[in-house]
Image 1 (cartoon, rainbow, N blue to C red):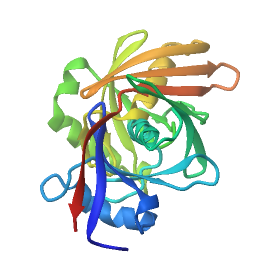
Image 2 (cartoon, one colour; image 1 turned 135 degrees about the vertical axis):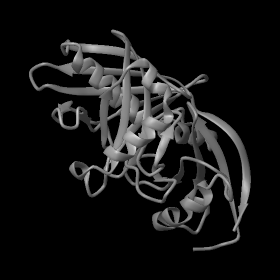
Image 3 (cartoon, rainbow, N blue to C red; image 1 turned 30 degrees about the vertical axis):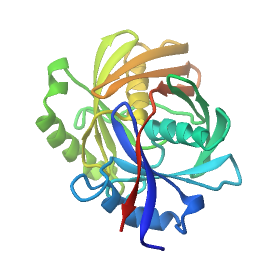
Image 4 (cartoon, helix red, strand yellow; image 1 turned 90 degrees about the vertical axis):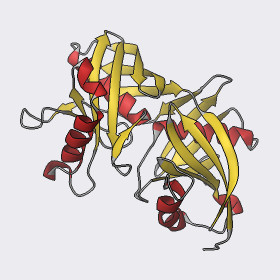
Length: 272
């Protein structure tokens, strides 16, 4: 891996912030991204971010999105990161409607003037884990559990961190752990959430896949009406929009869509 100066772009989606790299111009591979992520994401000695997004070549789509958490671990799919890298790719002359690869899945992005819409090619199911944990398990592209919460609980970050950390490392979810969402239903089509993110090891301002997981869980708790439904998901860092289709016969969710903001913050050079 070449050291020296590393050009980067800082982006954020609903307060979830990222260091964005173009691997096509760096002599790096995915392992290099993992090794450098803790330094780049350090908020005291680095650039500061929840994770690193890296755009690379793909044989299956327009490009590959490599995403590493702030601790260098693999995050699977990241919804807010996916919207950010789609806007970043569009700035590099990729079309406003394009596809990108994350592991073995290909996602479709629509980049608009005010936001980005992502189409998730996954089939998800909501599973209750039992009263001992009191949470619902959902995988809309990465591992999540969702716990219903009272409105006032969402403002107690210290307790959310404590409970989130406890469940993130629970034996049930080892060896990789899970993301932990705390959800409060505001109306039939609106929820508020807070998410303790694995790899960041803290409550973040927003989580895109957490918004999806929470919306699916809220629908599940509302008698699982069939058809297509839309939800507003309010996170501390901004509002996200989820669309889903539920099939009664298979008890599964498909045609998952996540919409929300994706903004450039600044560009710079990290000197290693």
